[in-house]
Image (cartoon, rainbow, N blue to C red; front, top):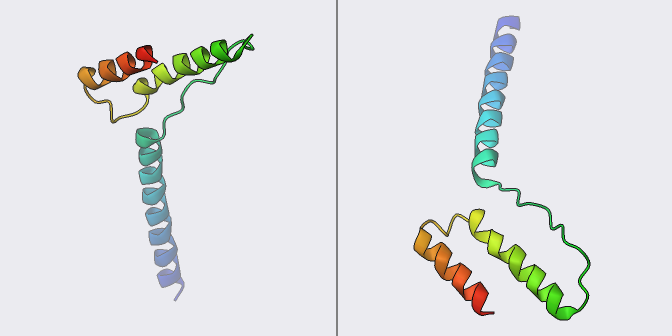
Length: 82
């Protein structure tokens, strides 16, 4: 009885370790931490909007849907038009 319990506990430990490793791999692969939004206080609404658009331009570095340079440059160009 004691052997079965130990075998069960060891197998559960191995399963939890494997799940933990898989969760860590998932986290490292898909969770991206963008840089903090550190800008000076804007003087007016136009400057605030320009700061926001500058920060939005960094979005292509973190979103995986911009997988080609063409998509990145198209997004950057659309921001510059604004």
